Length: 429
Length: 176
Image 1 (cartoon, rainbow over the protein chains, first blue to last red):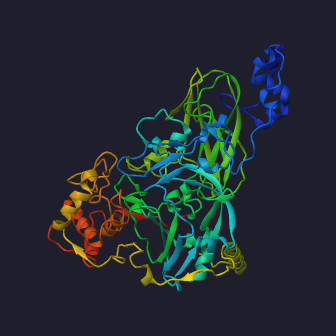
Image 2 (cartoon, chains in turn red, brown):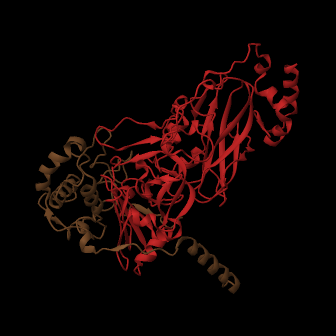
Image 3 (cartoon, each protein chain N blue to C red):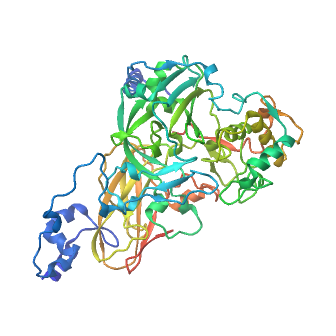
């Protein structure tokens, strides 16, 4: 009986691209009975064991607590953290487990980290933000001062410039989505606009740049043009409703929407207006993009239009044939995501995925598309388009633009191969 | 190119006002005045024109000892670098693979002073005196063949030392 239903449904599914990609609306139209037949025919063969009331329904549970934590059964939701550096204390990264998460917001405890000299333990009562240089009146603000200012709330992604750099290497590593792309997160950030603070200090004619440094051991610094600073840059004080975490710059960080994460200086303590960039170590020696001709691009701030499939993704296994949801995230440092296409045949045919995001500029956009896997090999890819019309390029196209050592600003299309056994692997295709 | 129509200009002005209104709000004006003099020794930014360089000076000959004590364990006696530690010396603007060292890649000497003073050595950043930083900067430049060992490096001379890759960067800051 179920076999027959299954067969009928397969034939009636509306294929929108080769190798099993299905029209989502059509699938929803089939209803539960129709889709259910495809999802797991084994359900139909359930045994006749009596269903029991579980033990936890027969005792009171634990008491409320001051600050919640995830279920002990969900303790695999962890950042992918590297071993501590022996030579650079506190320097390192941890990556967001993108392949485990859903939706568009990253939990605060899973937001990626990149530190250059560890996480300072800052007492907010002792912390100061100084705005000086080419301003009419240099001013100092305490944390408490800033808490009293008018605030703004926005959802923005944050991506490290070196994210996905692993896939610029000569051979494709057998890695997870988190290991390759996990220097990417998205939060609701709340804070005080830099423009309003600069309104208070005044700006001297001729000032064109804003240089910022943090209060960490490395006193990490970056420069951004004043026109961007006045457009949408703010001092972030809250992340997803609570004070930003120490890893994210507590008590305050600069937030520069859409631009490489490094310019959103954490533990922000100094803003100095100038008539040129400071040319800090992290905007000359690092975070510059070497070209094939030996020149290097400097101050390449916006992150390119990009997407990746988070499920199924590298090192996962498909345990059954049938219907799967292919899902992932897309984002652009230049605008909103307007389209994500998915391919199951290595880019030969494409179908539009359903966008399940906010449609906002500079935020992650979840995409989804049904996929009927019938045990054959497949190469899954996604390709994003943003509101400025930019389309995510292939890996080869991106690599051709740079010298071989460059690891920054890689936004090439990600390919996951699926073997006949259902093993999912990172491949170059 | 034709002049924009008045109506278009008006629309532009309106949208500029609107976006400005979104970000520049009335504030409670809680900032406390501070003077640049108060920030001396706290503001560590050194820019390519030499602004921010402190008083003091050093030579490579003096810097060798500082380098051996503070830097060589990680960066190597000759500045060749080590596992997970960038090399300071070697390569050129044209050799491949690109080594991206101070001598072959960094565009300005100011960056070297700025970075060493604010962030080095990693176990005790900001522990070197301004004079020690001048000395070790002179030594790293000397390892790269850019200054003789007795050249006095100070706030006047350091910005004038031209790095081999000073013209190697393309400013993309207005591609937003």
